[in-house]
Amino acid sequence: MKIYVDADACPVKKTIITIAREYNIPVVLVKSFSHFSRDDEQTGVETVYVDTGAEAADYRIMQLAQKGDIIITQDYGLASLALSKGCTVLHHRGFTYTNENIDQLLQSRYVNAMARKSGKRTKGPKAFSSEDEAKFRDLFQKTVEELI
Image (cartoon, rainbow, N blue to C red; front, side, top):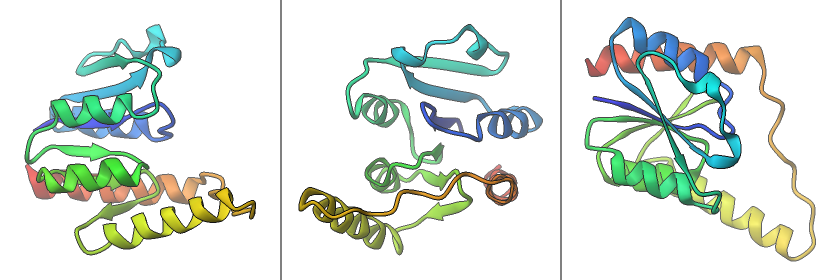
């Protein structure tokens, strides 16, 4: 098992790395070259850089991931693909993507995109909070323990 992180805008990378180290699970951060940092060089953490294209990180994660891996992403499209590959997929706000909820999430993304395209304003996500961090940490810890 490996943990793949759609890392460009992921606010819980440190939490993921800390918990993964406790269980000796390799972590792969996938990010665009525009987010290059020497700080990414850590024991037990591999960083894979991709082009800055819109879905470059998503495509690379799907190339690397295997059934049984954990993927952390906020991208509903990537989550859908990963679920079909047999991966466990988590959102950094502390919920699990499932075959039962992914269609509704994709539908709401589509409806909001169409509203924006027609000139309407839609609300963006709320600011990431310490409660979100705690919710993710608890879910991630529980998920890892269930899968090992």
